[in-house]
Length: 137
Length: 185
Image (cartoon, rainbow over all chains, first blue to last red; front, side, top):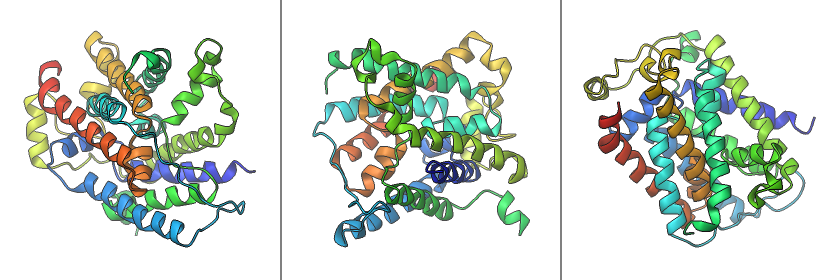
């Protein structure tokens, strides 16, 4: 039962990603070519509401449903890992037209070839785990 | 009314829904970050025995795997019950640019040239999907997050690392779109 709410949120997420067409390779290409506002509108709206909501959570010290304070942990300070890691991610995002969430939504949608992309994303994460000590962070 | 659901959902409604999902996850004591699941799957597969990065209490992340399963179901529902099955209506200039690389105008959400079985079972097509996935998986963990963790959650918290990561997403995305893709497609 405690997992049901996460299942429902996931279902809503999957429907929204599919119906907004954010799972489409074409939409990602259109975004990286700056030829439509659609994807920027989606991300921009989410971030704008996110900034307002997070600020309100901090200001009014809103608690979660367990009664614990909602905390935000700052990420480690670094430039290299975010810039290099982000660039590698972007190369893959533009090529496959999907980040991790949309990959699995695509599989549910019926684009089963995304299983190949998702499998190799797991392999990519594994390779990071193996080589992480040798990489600049 | 039916058309309101089967047509492409507007950017403002979709964006607001994504923000809502993030807030619900915060309210339920978790945070919105999809690529963590890739690490969890590695850990659940037992890779933590040899690689320390995957040796952690992955069972605490099961909620996110359930979220992942939900999103597969969501994709299925959208495709089978909420869609008119039309092509994605991208801008004419994108269709023209993609045409120059041999990608035909959309007939569905994804290009057949990349995602049909014919493409998957060709050497080039398989390598494109494999390397695309590989870079997303490697890059998201290296950067400590993907679109949901950095671009949505991180920017909402005004975290500088997330801004740097998102700048990286675009450096990579633009490099692929304008410099690399014309050569490989």
